[in-house]
Image (cartoon, rainbow, N blue to C red; front, top):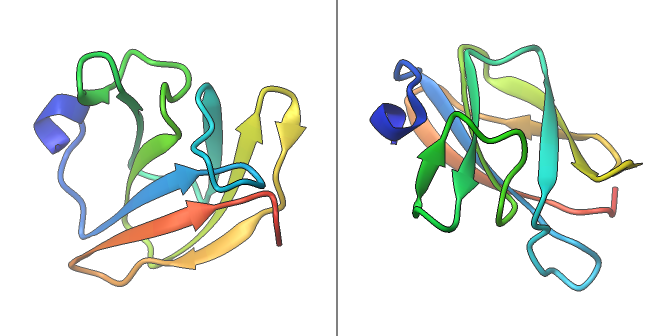
Amino acid sequence: WYTDADIAPASSTLIAVTVDCNHDVVAGSTLAVSPTPAGLVYYDDATQQWNPGLAASTNGYTLVAGSTTSLTVTAHAGAIAFPPHVVEVPANTLTVAVVSPHS
C-alpha cells in the first residue's frame, strides 16, 4: 500500500470509507484530516491501487498515514461537508472507519 501511495510507512494507519445515507460509497469524495497526516492518498478504482495523483477518491476509500493516535476526519461530497468524526488510530495498527453523513 505504502509503495503504491508513494508515502512512508507510519506507526498508525487509517483506511476511511466515505458512505452516503444509504451506506453506498461516495465516488468523488474527499477527506479533510486534522491534525495533518504524514500522508493522505485516494484509491483509484480503475487501476485498483492507491494513487497519489488523485484529487478525490473514485470509490470513497482514503488511506491516511499518520503519527498521531487521534484524528478528526471530515468527508466532503462535492461542496457538501459531512459532520466531523473523531477516529482513534492506535499505534502499530490498521484501523478502518466508515465516515457517514450521520454524526
